[in-house]
Length: 330
Image (cartoon, rainbow, N blue to C red; front, side, top):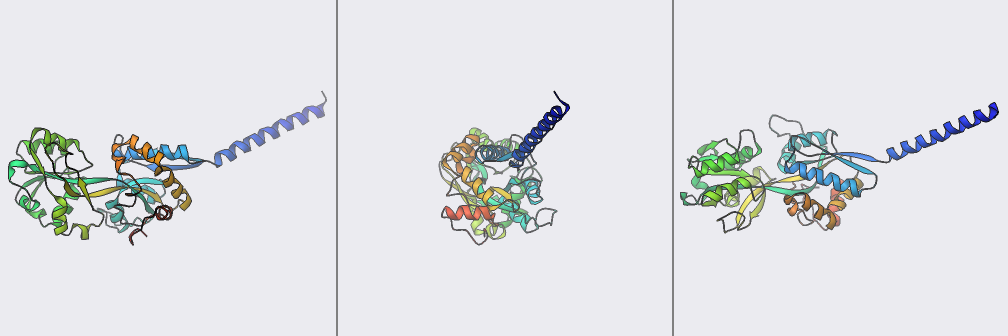
């Protein structure tokens, strides 16, 4: 073999390797990698984040969505706003307060995160013992009410509600968790228990299993007060009769909403395509296999509880579905 032939083969091999390398790089460049900020391990936020990430990675060509654990709603808002995440799950209340610079100890205005859709609701339960003679919220004046741990979302929502009906300074809040509160109610150490969570809730079931309980009509009291004017992210919801042992009547209450959000940096097409995959019949079936809370996801409920602007891609998608957007969602 001549020296010339050997040199030619070496050059040819290098050229082929270079082309192969370029081809691999091009393939990698074609994969769009997105991050979805969820919640703590084992929490509902994390189930939804993982479910949506998995579904989108499987169905969107050239897209890989990774699920990120987080502390929850406010951290997700901050991540999406700063482009440390592309998608996230944020309570409607935190979206509203964040966009208006009203988060606790945080006056920054988070304007780069936009709502995509409603996922599920966190309704208020206000539980008393059936034989205690308390049938209306106003009768809690002078009573001990368990409102959730100090600094929790439950305690914050309880304060907003009771302030709106003029009772916050007339009750004695007990800052204890749901399970402890259910036990304290049964032991007559408190008069009422506030639970802010999806239904059926295990702590409410615990209270109902060992006591005859009554759920108060929270929405009726809220409508007579200023809750909806002061906090427009709260929405009406009904806990159906039979959800809890011994509660054979509908309970009309209020709820905050867990929202799917996206960064404004994402294209309208990417967000609209993502919605199409999740809100297809197959997508909704998949989400309901991921979490029971996804039973509330549908085209009908897609824009419920959203009081802040939608992402442009979400506006296009929901308009195509025949939804009329509110002024706040524009």
